[in-house]
Image 1 (cartoon, helix red, strand yellow):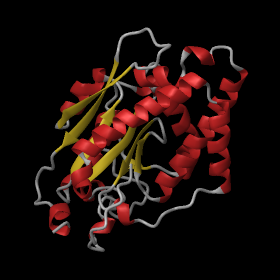
Image 2: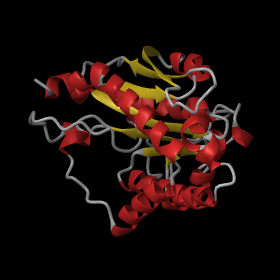
Image 3: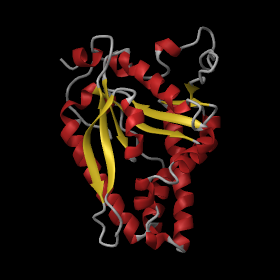
Length: 270
């Protein structure tokens, strides 16, 4: 989410959070960091990694509770429109990753087998980017091809999560980075890829002293994020759809306080 605030920003602070953190930047090597034994190599995501990244995200979230509730409700079963919808969704993901690559706001391990997306603080003053014709077309077609249950549940999810953000982040949005997504392909889980990426983001935000928020769509991951000093500040409970008969689905909004340096974000906000 991009928060539109009227407060004037310091121009130098606007660049905070772009690229690899200083602790991971190589000397004379543009491809990434020098790989230490048993430590996964974290590099900036490249355009060539995008096809693999799309597959990674879809595979990683295959059994995710929110994914099943919102994107694969019962009325998608056997629906010919669902296959078109999924193809459009892949295209939309690829275009989204393209923007993260362009803005240098995505890290990866193993060329797309694990990825983290992030947005820096002060992003609200960035020039508004008009969606391309292709993006606008994909958005329109996705709405046409979505099912009634998908539309209802997406509206529920977006509404409740936005409300939680406005309550816990909105008043101080200029102090926050955000982790917009973290995914590791199931075939590569358990090798420390996700931890390496989260450490990279933590190093980035700790350089400037900004707080960070993320949304966890599965409470099973709460302990993992807590190991990086994130604290759950809100639960988002889904299941209002009249056709849903399962247990309530819980997502978390989590916040991390900065460590180390005094906050550049706070100084710039004065």
